[in-house]
Picture 1: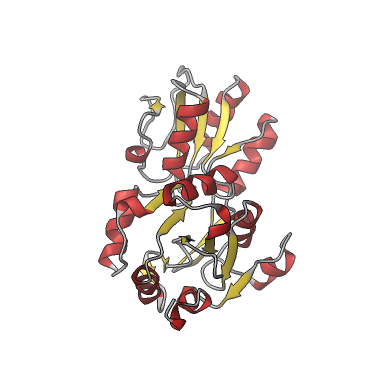
Picture 2: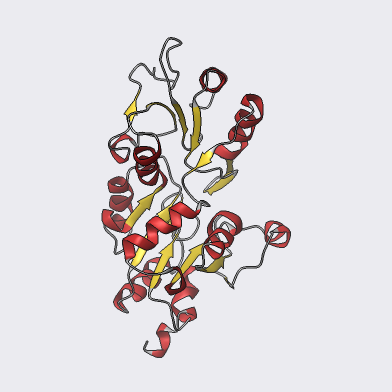
Length: 272
């Protein structure tokens, strides 16, 4: 770990669960920042804006600012600007993240349940995080747009996440159905896409070999980062399940019990 010059950190399940700090997480992040290591909080969270996330974390004691946070919606906005400039986009998402979708042309005839009007001209269906909005009417409307030739862009394809009430179903379960029904494949912009990690590394100004990624999702966080050349650290908190660990397609570079163990892994206790 001597070559590590920056740390990428997932939020949900690593630093917090249901936005409540996990034991030792605040202290560990302070130790990393005090050591002078730049950090990027990289998250597939699609229910809140970067500013809202930063505010919640600061209230919990974490030493962060909005500019430290890279969200799937923010990366999606950059992706759409590059790949689909000017496209009319129908957004299916739980939570208001329009602030982080700067420059994206969203259709304006979406009702309170997230249903787009039948006569709307849609070039891209953008799928964010799952929630009550993912009912039959909204999913069927998205299916209709896809049948008429719209592209499918997903902020992530996580199957579930952990809350204080346990594991909750997420976007991946619905996305698979849309892909099969419409005979298309989603363009994924958040983790585990390589573009997401490239954006985080570019923000920190380091190469892949100089960074470490800490996450609770062995596939989307850790192994995806390793495929991008970033050292992966799996924590046994959040959505971590032993059976998922055993069934994974690869082996994490490092496995620790929680984020509280990361400073020691980085050698910070040795006065680095």
